[in-house]
Amino acid sequence: MRVIAGTHRGRRLYAPRKLALRPTSDRVREALFSILGNRLTNSRFLDLYAGTGAVGIEAVSRGAADVTFVESNRDALKLLRQNLELCHMGEEIAVLGQTIQQFLNHPHQWNGPYDIVFADPPYAEASELPSLLAEPRIHDLFALDSWLVIEHAEKTALPISLGCTKFLRRYRYGDTALSLYYRPRTVQA
Image (tube, rainbow, N blue to C red; front, top):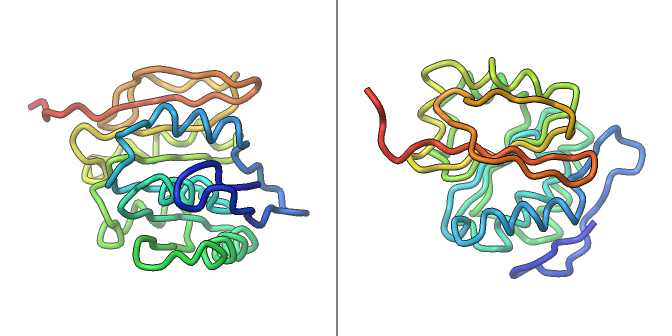
């Protein structure tokens, strides 16, 4: 596993050996950042189910202003912190060792609203995201005109809207898919 582009390009990251983690592949990560394009520059980026931190680290490397990592697995959190130390990241990142539900229940911890929210839940848990994002207070997590990208199994069907976000497009990469949602620039009454 390595950082693909940006200021940390080519840096090798610690990868899970025996953990039941499924890090985002280099191919899918490259596709993700191609989709995000210039939207990433100076953005606030939220990495839910952060795992090893490879996606969030790539975001900082490519110009995100700051990244918040949320991960509950203690072993993954250890790897994430090792990778952040390896890349000498400090002020531009925040690491929260808690479940997504705990994070969403404590808005005072949010470093948002976020311009880009990336969620890579265990494939079996992807169908739980609609209920997690349905509560009205979650709308404050997303900046106006923000994007939500969910990595999931290609065969998983997600709804047309998730909370305040609307489905835009789905990209397929073998048995993996990226579903792109957006929060409209204007709030509808």
